[in-house]
Every structure is written in C-alpha cells, then in structure tokens.
Length: 340
Image (cartoon, rainbow, N blue to C red):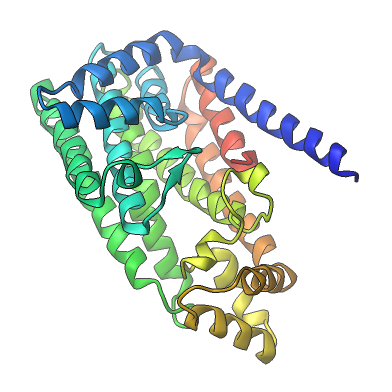
C-alpha cells in the first residue's frame, strides 16, 4: 500500500472511531452537554492559578467516555435520575485527576497534542491540581447525599492509587506475571469504568446495578489491553503517541508478557538489554516491538481482550432492548477497534 493510501486509511479509521463514539453518546447527548457545563462550574475557584489550570484542563478534556457510560447506565431502565449529571461530572473530574498525576509521574510534556499541566506550569502544580480535582469530585458527591454512591467512588479513588503503585512495581519483565498485570489494570483502569457504570445505575437503573458494574469491569479490562496493544503500533500519526512508549518507560504490558515464553534466548537477552538501559535507543525499542510481534504477543493480547469484551456483552443480556442498550454494546466495539 502506498503512503498516500495508508494515510487515507488512517483518516478513515479516525473518522469511523469518531462517528462510532458520537453514536454511542447520541442517547445521552443533552445530558452530556449538561455534564460538561456542570464540570466547569465545579472547578471554579477564587484562586487565579487554579482557574488557569482548570481552564487549560477543560480545553484538553478527552472523549468523555467514562461519564458517557455513567449516563447510559442511569438510563438503562428509561427512568434516569437528575443526579446522574453531577455523578457523571464527578467521574470525569476523577479521571482528569488521574491523567494530571500520570503525566507528572511520567514527566510527559504533551497530552492530546497540547502541553501537560506539569510542562505548562510545574510538577508541584500538577500534583496539587490532581489532588484538587480528586477532592472536588468527592466533596461534590457528598453533597448529593447518597452514601452508597460515595462509597463506590471512594473505593475507586483508592483503587486508582493502588494501580499506580502496582505500575511502579512492574519493572521486571521476566518476573511480572499475567495475574499481576490483570490486577494492575483492574485497579488503574477497570475500577473507574466499572464505578462509572455502577454509580450511574444507582441513578435510575438500580435493578441492573450488578450487571452494569460487571459490564464496566470487563469493558475496562478490554479497554486497557487494547490500549497496550496500540502502544506497539509504530505510527504516531495513527495512535496519537510514539510507538513503543511503554517499552521506553519500562512498563510491562500483556503483549510482552505473553511473548516472553516463546522467545529465543537471544531475543530474551535483547529484552533484558532494553530494560537495563535508562533510555533505550529507538532502534532497540523498534527491535523489541518486532520480537514481541513475531513471538505472538500481540495475537495473544488481542484474544484476551476479546474474551473480556465477550463477557462485557454477555453482561448486558438482562438489559431491556433500547437505544441505550445498543449504545452500551457499541461501546464494546468502539473499545476493541479504536486506533487512538
């Protein structure tokens, strides 16, 4: 395929992903717009610095996938509770907090093509701003007066912190297990997606609470595995970030874990060299990406992600047929086929 044809295919992939997300959000579009306004109101502060950082974050906010799931869950029975707007806004504030903290820990300078808080301001500001977003989300939920929702989201906040600590421990590719990897991604990714679905269900679809929480857990697992597979794509124009970034940062993910047993001794030594280097050369990263691919790591990770996706779809069997159920099912396809 020519470079021009490849570029056109990538544009179509991005366009298709955007259209799919718009279709998922269609049943809750008005509620999502209300949520964005509410989120803006929640981060208002008399402190000029907080106002500057908040304005920047609202500019670089992402696809609002998690609050979309919370709003869809609340409408699964056709009787959404008005509190869902505040719940969804709090969920997105918590997600923003994790991104701010992640960028500071990783010393990232860009997110979605724009400066991160730590690069635009400082690491100190990023840490404190992340804390501000966390606490603002939690205090907002307290004012809602529902202790069960508060418990769910507080547990999620704790799991997110544990997930980051697990990430810091995952530095030895040859001893990190798949079970440890799944515990890590359940804490750092699936917990928030599951919490969004469960807390949303408590705002209008209480009888589906358990199945929606399970759906969110499995969707979150599939989401992170798909994200880890994307990191092995070598074209930054497709993924929105440099290929092999996890390897550069010595992060152990499922493709590598799955590939290790099938590697030759020489290939394993190349992986060891990469993980021993403080700043692995791009050529070495490229080489290890090829080794992982050839050893079947990506194929295994895709199969595992598809298993989680299938379980997420099965969890929706008891949800009444409606545009909301269709959107929740479409969210699974979106997660598995996204390119950025």
